[in-house]
Amino acid sequence: MDKRGTIDMIRQMSFGQGAGSEWLVTNGLGGYSSSTANGCNTRAYHGLLVAAHKPPTGRMLLLSSLDEELCGVSLATHQYPGAIHPQGFRYLQEFWHDPLPRFIYQIGDARIEKTVFMVHEENTTIISYKVQNATGELRVVPLVHCRSFHAASDLPAIHQEPGQTGTRLMSGIEFSLLSSGCRYVPGELTYYSFEYEEERRRGLSWKENLFSPGHFEIDLPGGDFSFAFAASTVRRMMPDWDTAQADEMARLCELKAPLPQLARSADSFVVQRGKGLSLIAGYHWFDDWGRDAMIALPGLLLSTGRLSDARAVLRSFAEAMHCGVLPNDLGAESYNTVDASLWFILAASSYYQYSHDANFARELWPKMQAVMERYSRPGEDFWMDEDGLIKSGPALTWMDARVDGKPVSGREGKCCEINALWYLCLVKTRALAASLGEKWKMISPENVKQSYQKFWNSKAGCLFDVIDPIDPSIRPNQIIAAAVLGLLPISQQRGILETVTRDLLTPFGLRTLSPHDARYIGRYEGGPRHRDAAYHQGTVWPWLMGPYVDALLNVHGNTPESKEEARALLMPLVEGDGSGSGLISEVFDGDMPQRPGGCIHQAWSVGEVLRAWARTA
Image (tube, rainbow, N blue to C red):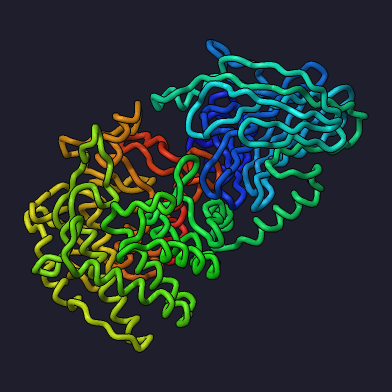
């Protein structure tokens, strides 16, 4: 396999290759099924059924894995202290990720094809099997837990009510293990000392025990034979798995865009919240965050033609707004952000541009007015200064990491991207007010544009990252200003683009700090403290390729040559980033070889690549 995982099918992989390629399927509730290409769980977050108990949150690991054994030959792969056992990956011939994870094993003449999928809008995972030329007994051992998906932990007491073809398990939450045509044999066992290598590398809890309530067995007759297992929190009989699989395949294949694989990948972020919809920020561990959702929305939903879903997501966040401030965490309703509300206005404006839906624009208009009024008056966290620029406290922008409670990058004062967004929101709301026949009484965007020249660093030929007080750090935030039409002279846009290209551009996104800065950290690794310190001090973020492409086309024009250049820059992310086909990670190392890190699948990473790609059409 290519070292960045740029192909969908992997043939006869080594253990390391398989463990390094991750897959993910989701259910539209925040629940998911995820593991590696060779079936070895390397994270506490991995499992065949991670159910969203309180959609889209309250996620619980229920079914960790199914260990198949055909006539004494195991197809499972686990890591224990000092050993990889069993070594089922040796029989894995092929792995496909898109549109559903599919594994093909070969044992002598016997061929076993396994497919994993979830029932949409239901906490149900189905694992289907198609077997050829296999005779003898197939035994399948479920390994379960009942814990928060966030960390490996001690086993709770798990009780069962066994039946002939499955069992009902209870431990705070109830769930069933079901089968089609298999015998269920109770026999409770504890398996000890599973190791999760990725959690060890991340400095987190990485060992735990798993419980098996029994096993399934089926006598294979030879020839062609199909059967399936299901894990579900729903009280139900075994689903018609063949129809369910066909339905899910059809649903995914209907998601078409200029990049169909990424359009299907984008679907995983769309989740139910109450009676509305929201966007998960990233898998495995993030919830639905305001800033991330608003940045991701145009690419995830507008460029893929999902206008009704975009409307529902905007409505969910608008309803959670408080005094003109969008929550940074929708579930917790925390409002510690200076930019989420600005991104909301831009997402709403993009929706109107795509849909021409004046009725919904009028519905959102009072919320948009509340945002603009909040930024125009004094406040504790942020406010408009006398020069029309927005000034904010520490750790309120997207670079909000803290170590020992102290902001790493700080960025207290007037931030270059916040004020670029402020200018653009003034332009957009003024135009929308005119279109809707609404009143608009705000500071003139031309006045903000004039004051914005304070950000120009003539010595460096680019923008100060922050002014009042001045911070000349070379960071990628200025590319957002260069992406805004009409804010800066073309000569300054060109200077920003050249500086960012020289110091920050990588194949997978933009570094968060110049490597020439003494504070630069080129590796995103180690425990939480080390990773938080590196998060915005050199670590690469793919989502920034969106505004980078905007700036590139602003400076060089929307010519075929410029668009071809932009697409070439996006291709490493489009083709794959090493975390699994169709997935784009949250971050990468600033230094070569730029390993992926953080969440394996990040909403604004995927959204901005989709949006930027659509712009090059």
